[in-house]
Structure formats: C-alpha cells, structure tokens
Length: 143
Image: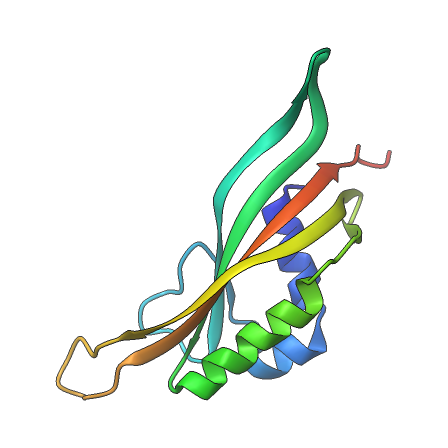
C-alpha cells in the first residue's frame, strides 16, 4: 500500500471528517461539478532518506490537502479536522494484508482561497488548504 492509499483509508475512518464530507475524499483533484463540501489531496513532494550504506525504507512525503466548500467557514471546518487528526500522528494504517507505518507527521503551511464562478451563477467556491509532512515506511504484505 502506498502512503496516499493509506491516507485515504485513515481519513475515511474519521467520523469527524466524514460527517462533513461524507465519502467525497478525492485523490489529486475534486471532480468538476461534484457535490460540496469535499476534500482533495495530492503528493506535493517526497524522497527516501539516504544513508552511506544505501537507501533506507523511511520515506518523507509532503501531502497537500484542499478542502472545498460553498462558504469559507465550511472549508475551514474541514481543514480544522485534518489538522486535528494529522498533527503529530504516528501509527500503523492497515487495509487488508497491507499496511503503512507513519513514524511522524508534521503540519507545514495553510492557506485560504476563493475561486470565482465560471458561469453567471455568481457563486464561487471557497477552499482552505494545509500541507502535511509524513515520515513513513511500508510494511511487507502479510501472507
């Protein structure tokens, strides 16, 4: 399982988040015209830690989360939940026979945006974003 797959499993299990976005947790982009509020996440950057003896199994990945809503307070509420469940998180995320060990997470930056309407509706979209660094390692599948 990849870290991005593990993050989806983990976030989907958090009732504080699903109470706000239901199952609308998307990888990379929110589909155009999809129901709001919603959450999209993507890998911003990443690398493996290197040692003199070669590459370790410890990865460092920065993931960006964008919380979409019809008003700014909804977007901020989703971002607050992401902050609450990921700040200094460590643990094992398992799905089936695969798992990922998150050694540590660290919140980096956050921001807010407004996307003007693309039509004559006069209703744009609000988003609140947050970037999180993860130090993680995959585990071997269970036989």
